[in-house]
Length: 302
Image (tube, rainbow, N blue to C red; front, side, top):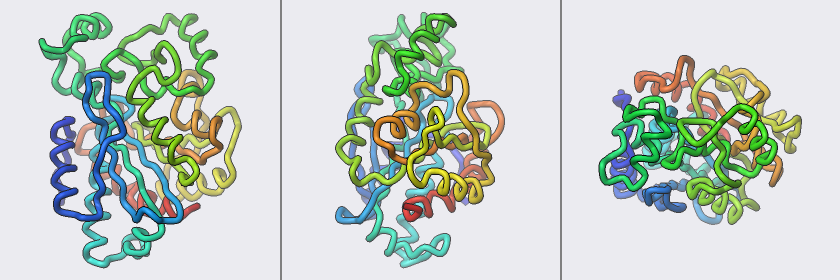
């Protein structure tokens, strides 16, 4: 059984380089860079002329970094099964490779993860600002990116409304919740949005992996793209996760909100696992077991 481990940014890049070297079908590149100039990886599985594509995104939030390991496990199993001419969840992997493309951004917030795992180094140009935002040098509760922006509030979905809420509640740059100066102010979000804009005609659905609660958010302000209700019920049945509506601060500025409101693309936020974030690495296997069928089946649900 594969060892469960929370990965640092450098460890992830090492794993992806090794996978792309071993497996010819693992297409590994970058969509842009973070605030501190760390390249943001994207892996694509599937042939270029595939009929449709889907997108999986992990680790908007630094406390939710085990989502990166879950997606990495999926990539490894996909590549190995393809090379064995195998089937997974009754899906022929050569058929899936030919008919669908799967774009995977396993770690959208590399700087935030490094803050949480390793602190802020002396050579960090944002060191003093980050320590001030954090209230000290222990970053074990840090969610945001390097500039203290919560990436999943930085999309252009009800952004102006959320700025009013921030002022009412005194939300400022720091560990979590702050949306940034303007939509897509953060290079991580801007890079992902630009990738989506370029590929939007072929993207049939999106999964955004978070922790925790074993819930699925699939609408925004009651708006539902075509197929979302049907697909959401399938996702709930496959995973055992409950369907829910985002409330309060969670209903502003997220990737799912933006995809639905801007492009009418079916998008689903999965709150994986139970407990308090950060969930321990020992939960990676159980989370993967619950969403494994979904990760392999989602591309053919559209």
